[in-house]
Image 1 (cartoon, rainbow, N blue to C red):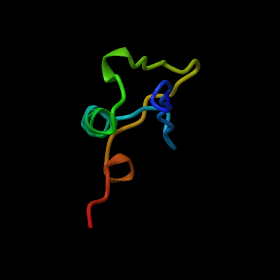
Image 2 (cartoon, rainbow, N blue to C red):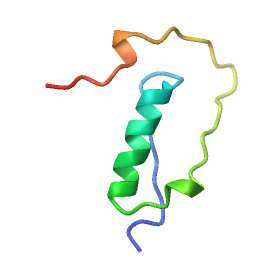
Image 3 (cartoon, rainbow, N blue to C red):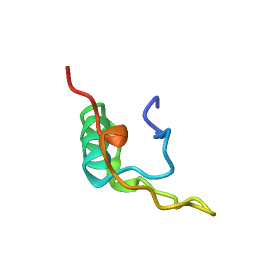
Image 4 (cartoon, rainbow, N blue to C red):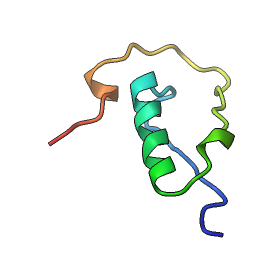
Length: 59
């Protein structure tokens, strides 16, 4: 089916917890099996501070 695969791509090496929760809720709403999602920690990942640059913009 069209809901077999889901990729979440980010412009930053990490997603904050609120952003992950928002994206997972949207994916579930669209019919994806979010209980099977895998979040991969990238190698050589630098720790970034969360802030405005990683928060979703609501208009």
